[in-house]
Amino acid sequence: MDYIKVSFVLEPLLPAREILYADLEILGFESMIDTDNGVDAFVPKDSFHENILENLMVRNIPDQKVEYSIETIEQQNWNASWESQFQPIIINEKCTIRAPFHESSLVPFDIVILPKMSFGTGHHETTFLMAQELFELDLNGKSFMDMGCGTGVLAIIAAKLKAKVVEGIDVEEWAYENSIENAALNNQSQIRFFHGDVEQLKGKKFDVIFANINRNILLQDMADYNESLNENGQLYMSGFYTTDVDAITKEGKKSGLKFVHSKDKNGWAMVQLTK
Image 1 (tube, rainbow, N blue to C red):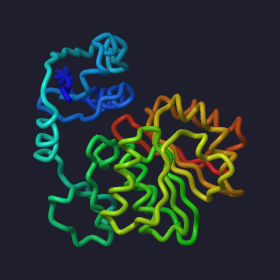
Image 2: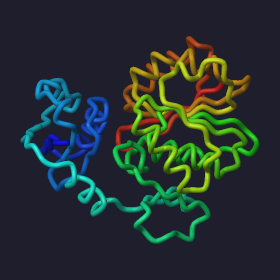
Image 3: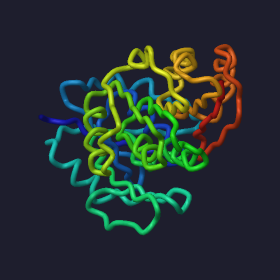
Image 4: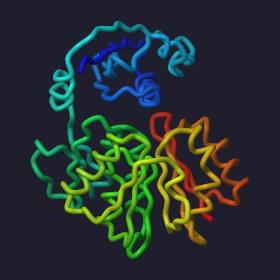
């Protein structure tokens, strides 16, 4: 299959690059690689139309320059490029998220992830923030849901933290399949993953729900998350900017959820609510 490579040049580089990553994820780009001046992004040729780049959120940053060039390439090139740049991530000095081709780590939690086309290596601020929160929780014996599971990394960490029941849901079939593969790589094949959206939550209850998706989906599905929480259950959300925290917490309040705390990193934020 032929792929389209879009090479973005950003001036200034940050925080535009992180915002662009969120843009491209929503638009269905399957792989993104940092460059010195921006991002190289890859999407199947059959699903690409140049007009999808006209309304990128990154263009709304004051005085931000966004330039790009487009070329058609073969699929083989981007996996090799990703492997050459992917470096292990260390979280709270307790956990390493690494690829299979990296050496194992001596930290208590050594997580092996083969992302393929999925989002969630720990490199992005939202995944990093959510992973940090996991290590602040006592999950022993609790039930855990990873909404928008991507690579399955948060579900895998939750299982290693002794959550009794761990499930994950993703709307993308390749993310669903990648999560299953990564769970097996980490000897956590008991985790149940489902392909679908919030409808997959119907009739289920969890002590803890993590939802790392995007602002619009979170606002749309907040009531469903609340419905699937046990009494005193905890809802953690990310995938949005610090400027969206008020909107997220207000929507949570409408559903009867109470604000606990928020945290941010490089303009991205997470919020914890409780039932």
